[in-house]
Length: 545
Image (cartoon, rainbow, N blue to C red):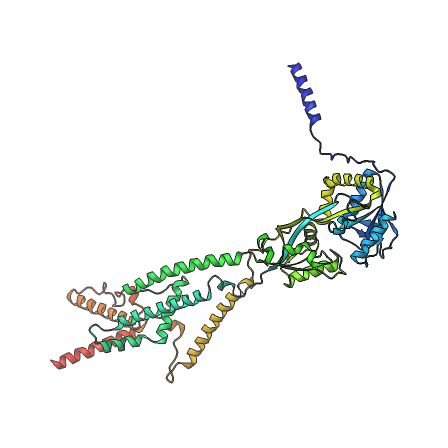
């Protein structure tokens, strides 16, 4: 057992020795260029995020220490300097020169040995590959930065709709609903009117009786009952069979209308309030879009963008690519609707959106990818430095595939960050339903005005007192007369029974005690009126006899 354990430990140790480590492999060009200088010519203006000058104003055509420059390019060159052994410094070129003049100055500086390399950003220039230069006086390194072209479009947040609660139905459907309520109210009014027609009445008499029911006040009451069915507040009895059939059909229609409205309202109020402007929605309709780009060309008909979009614009020539005036020009063009899309360096566009916090105004179209090698940052050297160019290229190929390079991209271009858009909170606020409160308040005001008008406009006789709320909620005259009549009948029956079956005085109960409880609160004046009417009828019968 001990021998097997020993062999197991040995095998485990050997396996651990063969496991890959997380340490990045060493650059193969380490120490290749010890003692050499690398003076890099760059334009004397901040080209964020590639390089930024720490001291302003910038001294032109004067060697600037590596410590006086920062940015993406500086960090990469600083690591390369430590690995391959070169000493890095910079030479600033006049930024007011045109593109052609800058090209001439670069060539002169390289040919006379004032600088060892120039940094080119924005892609390989066509003249660099011309017949005079190809394989001739200049050498080019592998790119230190490479990106394709992508796009951003305008993004806006929808404003709060005052009448958002009406959007689930179209105007035509709302009018159809109101018409349906009006038709149901009219049918209900006709049915009620037919119930008033006396049996066996002539056609003319029946029409006159039906006409008495067709009043505006009665139609208003019927419309209210029709509306109450939809609002789930049906308090009408619908006593007759025709009315019950009508109610069943109207309830079915109301059920579907209310369910559809509720579902659409919930969807509308909880939908994302972001509006992405298009075209383009993707590569398919990019050809019908107008574009803006910060990339400058001497002639628009030589720009590669002409093959992908309907038309394009760019900032004035005095605006360098990705300068403040160039980015402001394209940003405003997109926001003002002058162009549909902003086409530019994909990585730089993403970094711009994140750094400037434009997540609420710009949307990246990651599905639009063109010109894979459009933007490249690289170094151009004199052909006499072929050996340095080769070593620098080999070191750059290793550097751009290292974890440090990814960290630099994330630091300067925010490649691992993204816009967090929730589309708006699903929690509603007062502004979302302001229209509903205004409509409900308006109806309440109309009810108050209607009450006031009814008070002062209805005809009244002198001295007539308007019944109070308690009086209007007490039993009606017919109910009171019916109760008084039943009480009188109960007394007569009790009197007749006592005459036939006399009882002792101690067992005798008052007539009020023998009346049912529900009749004891009847106004005695109604009973006196009925007694008087009965006495008059008896006297009349005796006289007739």
